[in-house]
Length: 186
Image (cartoon, rainbow, N blue to C red):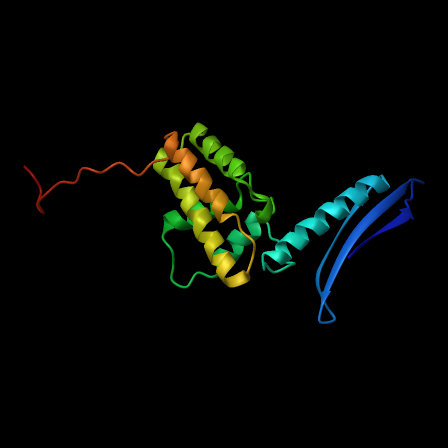
């Protein structure tokens, strides 16, 4: 499935490029490559990625649909049918530029989500606000899985949410006190 090619660089050293190309019905459906300074590193990367792709295929997931969190949120925002409220737009904008934004979605784990929420709390976000970020992650991931066939870490989000609720890092919003009656009081 993959191959390793060596080539001489301008500075005289040798670079080893591991390349994976997958064809289906004579069409290229997935390609990726990575260059290393040593052939053993290229070989290790190639074997690891081939194993990951084989696992993806065995689970029935589509190949070649790897996206960063930023790309996924941008795609989700582009699917807006009715105008969203200001809160949702701002929350999605924050997720698009957060510390996890440049990571591949299929490589995110519950540890990443826990660290992100704990950092949000340390920055001053309340338990309900931090919890709503997990809700947006879940909503974006479910949409992407249904429409794009992207491998998304829904189980990791759910595991992180369960843990964060147990340790009371996230919680439901407090019940608000509302005034009764329609008129002004004197």
